[in-house]
Picture 1 (spheres, rainbow, N blue to C red):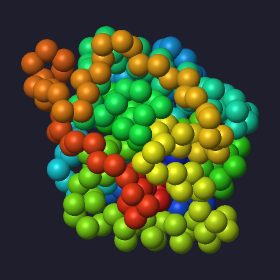
Picture 2: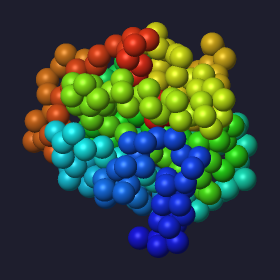
Picture 3: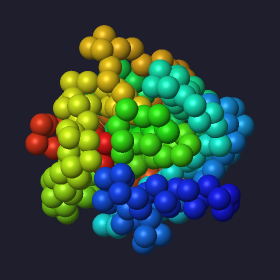
Length: 257
């Protein structure tokens, strides 16, 4: 564990500019796993990240109402603009997928097509919504001191919704974001017809944007197929079928500022 990096993460998450109340609370309660890597977009970072996320998926209690997340930070580069960060983000996720696909299939119930409205990023057979942050981000709440990726579980999102906590949490976070920046992230206004991949970096996209990520052929289990039993592809994960978003309950929670 990089003690200095952890201290910087804590300062960012507990600071006035970070508007995700669930994330702040989870850090205080020890619900966030943090790992620090050398180079953002690098192959060695992807190898280590794949191992750490596999351990995270296997150890997390996905039935708990407590919020948990995995945060990956990178020593550099720290001078990326919006376009450079977008490029590095997808390079890192592509490298991560190449490592992951050696062992695991795609998360059941979700599409591996990054252009699909049913897409979620899969690691260790588990569906994640990825949040990208960097020092020069256009959104004030997304400016940590170094490149950062937060992996939030879709299984957990569904648990929070089922517990009736989603809308209340979203409303509080959006109010905090408006207080900080004067508006909410316009990416949050995109709903089920568009892929969540458009929102990972937090930068605005043209309507015809094409995601550079390509899943390996054969990794997709697809909605409605057999569950991952954990017998030959790793540990079993909770199977939560894809649920389309609506304007009242967007795929991206208000934490994605």
